[in-house]
Image 1 (cartoon, rainbow, N blue to C red):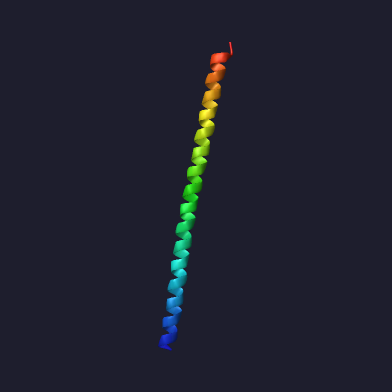
Image 2 (cartoon, one colour):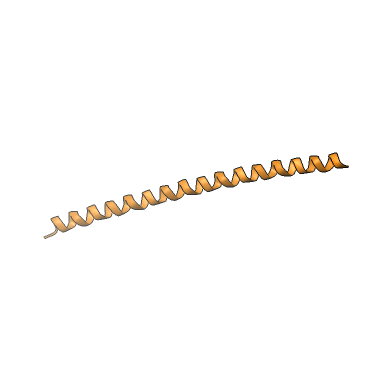
Length: 60
C-alpha cells in the first residue's frame, strides 16, 4: 500500500515538473512573440515617420 502511494506521488511530481516546464516554455514563447510584435510596431512607426517627413519635404 505504501509503495503504491509512493509510485503515485512520484508520477504526480513528474507530471508537475512537465507542466512547469511547459508553462515556462509558453511564457518564453509569449515573451518572444511580444518582442516580435513590438519590433514590428516600431518598424511600422519608423516607416510612417519617414513617409511623413518625405511628404513634408516634397509636397509643396
